[in-house]
Image (tube, rainbow, N blue to C red):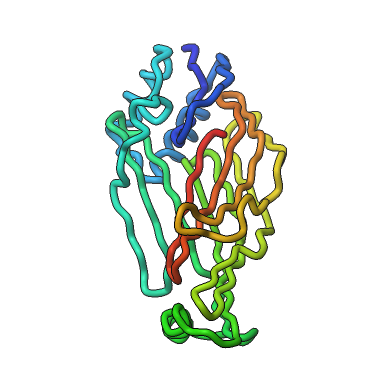
Length: 236
């Protein structure tokens, strides 16, 4: 049975320290890993070379700082405000980021996306009273590890934007020996965006498996505009 360097971290966004574990891997476990990679869009023909690359102790492009500049393979935005980004690296590794608006409120009452958009667009330069809330579901995955949480963003007259709460962390991990510990519940790092920076929230967790180990972070950034938000996901 071959030795496989069991590390499938496909979503690194910064310099990091990773614990490399070497262990025996069954054919069933390899099939499970392959399935998870296929589910997020890794091309079937790329999976064997990724496995071989890791077996040889080489670093996947997604773990290499030289590839931090890679642009999304595609960016989709839907009528309800949902956004999806998929990144594909030269060696075939993939990560997916998704932000899904879950509810719109104006002065505490549920509203449609179109009504909410019109309200936010109309009050940017006006003074007055009233507010609207947007609830977002933030999700990051590379197949084997998925992290998620919710965030509330409040908009008010005069173009005021504030990240008001983050909550309901969720984690899914796959593979033999998989476990996790949340080291930082969803937390607001900066509540209000400015002309020189975004509002920010983060959730962190230590996640371990027989073939991977590290501290993962899922971040949300909110711009000073009605529809401005994006996410990042990777090892801390």
